[in-house]
Each structure stands twice: as structure tokens, then as C-alpha cells.
Amino acid sequence: MASLTEEDLCCPICQEVFKDPVVVSCSHSFCKDCLENWWGSKRERECPICKKLSPKRIKPPVSLVLKNLCKAFLLEQDQRAASESEDLCDLHSEDLKLFCLDHQQPVCVVSRGTKIENNKRLIPVDEAVKGCREELQKSLKPLKEKLKIFEQVRRNCDETAAHIKVQVRNTERKIREQCKKLQRFLQEEEEVRISALREEEEQKSQVMKEKTEALNREITALSETIRVTEEELRTEDLSFLQNYKAAVKRVQQLPLLEDPELDSGALIDEAKHLGNLSFNIWTKMRNIVSYSPVILDPNSAHPELILSGDLTSVSRDTRQKLPENPERFDAYPMVLGSEGFDSGTHSWDVEVGDNPHWVLGVAAESVQRKGDTGSHSRLCGMRLFKGEYTACSLPGSYTNVPVRNLQRIRIYLDFDRGKLSFSDPITNLHLFTFTHPFTERLFPLFISGNKLPLTILPVPYNGNDNSLTFQYNVDDVLEYIYTHQQLMSNRWY
Image (cartoon, rainbow, N blue to C red; front, side):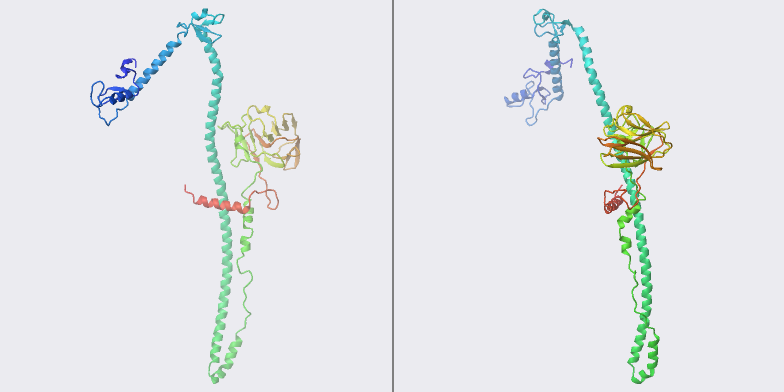
């Protein structure tokens, strides 16, 4: 660019810097509009410089290189003109060597004596530059801090997106495992019941076969006697009388059996095989399934907590790399239940075993999840720490609970009456009860300070009470499992 002058970039026709330059066949360049106007006044499409003719049907191509050079040249001219104009005073065309603090703009020495700048605060430009740079640096500081926050949030979003994929893979795997377990149970149950049906079929078919064979023998004997006797009846009188005594003896010697009847219970007992089939299978299925009254929420779990695959057990271990989502506790090793309670009564048992450091209880929905949990409020529970059992409601003091070696804790919440009770389900010993009116949703709370697990125990189902309330019809559930099994068998991997 330094070797090019304005003359090098001027159109030979208009004598100005090229606008949309095109190249004719003789390699001369012109503005597109200038060339078209030139050719419009001529008979032939001749070059304005060398007079060489150009084909009429071919449009001259645009010279992109020349066009870009012209743009760069004009831009440089504009910048140079702007720079030169900025360095001089608009009113006096003098160098701007002073800076007016009141108007926050540079002025020339001549302006210092005018009425406009009289009694105004003026300082040298170099001094003003230093102060303005420092001031601008201070203004940039909060923006830089804000930028760091945005970048951190963006990184967290990226980590969250990656963790979502991990969650989907793990959850899908566990769903498949559970469904396959139910499928195996149903397959085995189907085989057992079909086998029992086939066995009954074999037994009763054998009985029918034996009975039919016996009847066939009787029928054959009767038929033969009847046939022979009827032949005697058709003989001549003298012959008939001669054989009459033997014929009567033959008929009388054949015992007259009772009329044969089909024995009761000969048919397949369909009622035994089909009666309450879905319910009976469901009842038997309870031996391989369990119901937990509380399910842990992995999205709320501190990074040092490890949850079991079925989300009913928690222990503390090395810190994991997890997203900083709003629900997650980041100071104490805490995790909440996935479902909150705002009415009614609720109970769950926790196997604490030999874990030497734990807290069990409830937390309000608005509990503080970020920062030092020592300042948390809205927590209510019972803990074991340094060998001592205490009950605490934050904010508030700790109350000693004089017991030893608890293996299980039962938490009972009566939301409407504002009661939270702790007891030992093994000995039925009452431990402590909080009485406080609850005003917001409460979530089961778990804190573990050790690798030994805290496990939520399943609720027993005895098959004849309402200890569990299922949300689905048994037939619907079994139909879903069968359908899912069929879909899985037809799936291509």
C-alpha cells in the first residue's frame, strides 16, 4: 500500500478513485459505470485507452484485488484525516496541549484566554492522560469481575451439560437393569405356571386315556356278545332251540356293569390357573421389589457424598467433580430427600449402623445451600458427633439425648400438628420430639461424615393391609412390563 499513490488507483475516465472497477480484455481497468457510459456513446466496445475492441456478449469481470486496494486506500485516507483533525483545535487550528477538567475535553493554548475557558481548570494533556487512564482502569475493574463471573457460569453450564449426559447414561442403565430383573421374574413365573398347567394336562389326559381304554374293552365285549346272540336269533328254529341254553348262559354270564359316568374334576381347573392371576403374581413379586418411603435427591448432594444406585443409601468419600447447580450443598456433606412434605404424617427408618458422625432430620425448602452451613437455619434433627447424641434445631441450642449405640433411627413427621419425633424402632424407645408450627415444605435431611453408609430401610408389605398404596392397577403394571419386554426383545443394538 505504501508504494501506491492516488493516481495509481484512479479511473482514466472520471479521474477519481475506482468505484466497482472492472477489467476489459486488454487488461485496462475502469469504473463500471464510467465504462458503460463510454460504450453507450460509441458504436464499438473499444477500450478508452488503447482502442482495442472487447466482445459484445462478454461482460467485463470485476477486479476484486483492485476493488479491495481502493477500499483500503480510502479507509487509510479517512483515518489520516480524522487523526489530523483530532490533533488540532476546531476553532483556532492550534495544537491541543491542555485539558479542561470541567468540560472533560482537550483545548489549545489560545482557548485558555477566551471567555469560554476563563476561570476553568486546565491541566497539561500528559497529566490529564495519566489521570484519565487511572480512572478508566478503575471503571474497568467491575466489568472484569463481571466477566469472570460470566465465564465461571459458562464453564459451569458446560460442566452441567456434560453431567446431564452422564446422568442420562447412568439412569438409563439402571432402568434397564430394573426392568430386566422384572422381566426375568415374569419369564420364570410364566414358565412355572405353564409347567403346572402342562402337568395337570398330562395327569388328566392320562386318566381320560385309561378310562377310555377300559370303556373300549367293555364295549368290545358287549358288542361281541350282542353280535353272536343276534346271529343265534336269526338261525332255524331247530338250530335255535338246540343252542338256546348255551346262548342264555353266555348272555347271563356277562356281568351288567353300572352305567359309566365321567368322574368329577376331570377338566382343567382354569380357575386355579387364572383366578386373580395378576394379583397373585404381583403378591409374589413383592419378594424381589421394595418400596422406600424416602428417595435421595442426587442433585442436592454435596460433592463428597456417594449415593447408592437406588438412591436409598449415602456415605462420604473423596470429592467428585459435579456441576455447581443451585440445589447442591457446597459446604457440609448434606443431601435432601427428593420429595418434600407440606401436610399429613410421614415416617422413615434409617440404618445408621456404626457410622460415628451423622445428622438426620428435616430441612425447610428455603434452607441455605451455599456457603458455611454453620450459619444455616431452618434445620431440625438429631445427630451423633464424638460419641454423643444430641437434638438440634437451627438456629438454637443442642440438647443432649442420653442413649448409646443406636443402630436405627425412626423419624416421624406430623406436619399438621407441628411435631418431629425420633425413636429407636428396635426397642421402641422414644428419643426426642420437636414441637414447632411448620410454615413451609419440609424435606428429609441426611448428613454423613463417614464412609460407612446411612441407609433408608424399605417399608415392609404384608399383602393384606394398606402399608403401601400403589398408584397403578396391577394389570396395568404387568401389561407394561410384558410390553416393555416385547419391545426390548425386538430392539436392534
